[in-house]
Every structure is written in structure tokens, then in C-alpha cells.
Image (cartoon, rainbow, N blue to C red; front, side):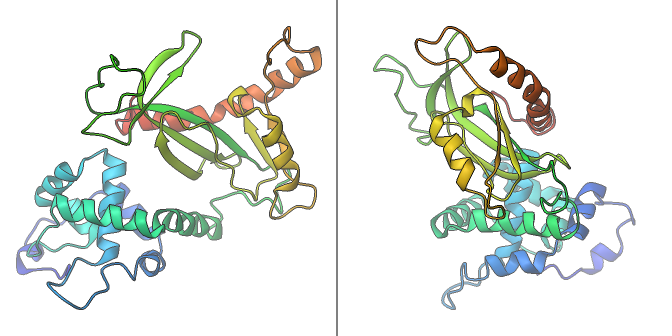
Length: 295
């Protein structure tokens, strides 16, 4: 697949070029990513399937351009830059939405989504695009989460706030903000590298899942009050994979039951941590402004 046809040689030079996708294509070692999914669709029976790496690239395009499987099938049919990025020539068949959906499910069942993300993060580190904890003393991970509204009609709450949607059974309910407003959909958890602003880890969960996401090899973890708990603070002291003294706890404090406000030292600590932790908000701003995420 992907062999150029005579028609492609006759196209104007700049037609179908996408500078951003071309930069990504050059920066990533696709062969290594392909090895992670090499066993998917390995059966020698039946009609030959699409190369797994091609479908990985399709899923990446879906995320970057906020496309559904049906929209992705249509885009591959009429966007030359997308076809070039995934490795389809003009003469090649296009994977349909059912194929894309099955592949995504296969990755989830085999636990390969996390391995793909881990491999990509490793490549960024090797290229010096991630700040390494062994030579930057204040390197850390900024944690935060944002709510993402489900793209289906909210189910009726007549039977209770936990009512599910038949069209999107993974979406769930939660309450957020001081007004405790109800939200139906998902929660995007992000761990951002303090030194570079690159996202080291991300996870999309039903909205009711508590805030989380620590990489384990950072020198420090910065988080707002939602991450505060005795168990998490104790875990940070002993969880580091690279340091005997654990991970520096830079999580903000919050008032607990029967507590009248915070002592002065905790207020001062929160004031110092807040501006650093807030840098992760840029990630959510970009996702919602440029990639169609909304909550």
C-alpha cells in the first residue's frame, strides 16, 4: 500500500501538502511504533487487513482533528494530506468506519494504547524534548483534569443522576464547581512536563473518576486542591522510580471537614504553588480552542 500512482506524479507539487503533518511524520520513528502493534491482525486467514501502523495513524488524525470514525472515513476519501500521512496512495482502498472502530477496540483489549503513548513519550525524551529529572533539579509534572461534554443528548435524570445514555454508555455524571452543577460526559486527565510544556501522559475517563495521573519518575508533582489526600501525599514519599527520597509533594492544601480555613503556612504554600500549577491550563485551552474539545 502507499505506492504512488501515475496520477500522483502529475499533481502540482504543493497539492495535498500539510506542513504540520509532515513535521510530525519526520519527528517520529514510526517503525518503533509499528513494532508495538505488530501482532494486531496477524492472522494469515481471510482478506488481507490494513497495516496496523496505518490504522494507528488514522486514530491519531481522529484525535488531532476531533473526527468521528464516520468523519474520518470521509476525510480519508477526499483529503490528500491525510492519505499521505497514513500511507495510502490514490489507488488504495480506504478503511471504513467499522474497521477503524474494531481496531480501536482491539488496541484497548490488548492494552496497547498505553504502550503506544509510552513509546512516543520515550522518543520525545531521546530527542531531548522532555526535561530529564537527572539533570534538572526542579523538573516536575503538572497535574490537572478537565470535563469534556459527551456529544450525545443528556439522558433524562428522572430516574436519578446516574442514568446512562444508550448511545454513549461510557459517559457518566459528576458535579463540579462551587455551584455543584451537573455534568454528563468524560474527564480528561493530563500530566504535563514542567520544563517543556509537553504532555507526558493523558487519559480520558468517565466524568465521575477522581483526578489522578502521576508518571512516577518526576522530581515533583504539582496539583490543585482536587489532588489533596493523605494517601496520595504518603504515596509520593515512596513512589519514585528514580529517587530514594520519593517525589516532592507540591500539591495544594484544602480545608477538611470541621476545619475553619487553612493555617497561614498552608495559605502561603498554596499561593506559591498556584501560578506554577496553573501552567497546565494552557493544554486544555489549546484542546478546546483548536481541537474541538468542549465541556
